[in-house]
Length: 225
Image (cartoon, rainbow, N blue to C red; front, side):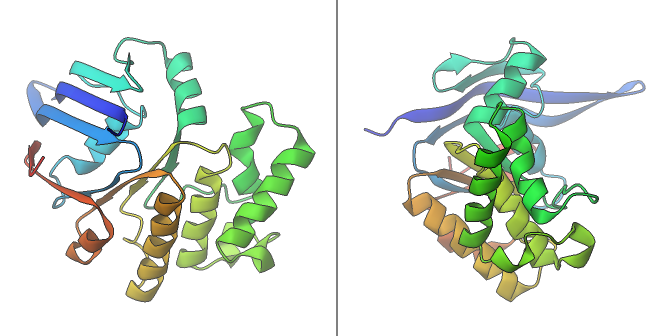
């Protein structure tokens, strides 16, 4: 029986906009298991990115319980959440979120600084990770000199620097062409085969064949759980 890594129980997310309350997530119940390749599919405005942020401890739920490796994280401190994110979860953003004045190598190595990894070790690992995603020839290039696909591969390498158990990606193929998108999904497939749990949020039906599970979200409610 596979271990449950993330479990959501009756999770709601509500935003207060002046006098109006906007319910984005409406009673989400979901389990993510070790070595899952989960595709979370939904249109714009469905709540899929909000759900991903809550699952990966980047945002807080308004109500409900969230368990990470059987530990309820709903009421823990921001510092504790940051520590969990740093060690357990690698996040890949649609718009890459690379730091413009840092090289590819420096961007990838950056999260390891917060885990007190010494410079020699983190740069060595960053080089290896960039090599694994086919960017060994771009180590010293800054983001402005990289294509969209190269930026996304730098972001993937960065997400792996602390060897997290779980990789989450928000629309990882949204800003690249279809050929590059396929290459990125193949990288995720290999990571999953190596033992990583992968969670990908997308609106692209072409990606669903990569997952071992596909869950649809519409108007803040899950289908096909």
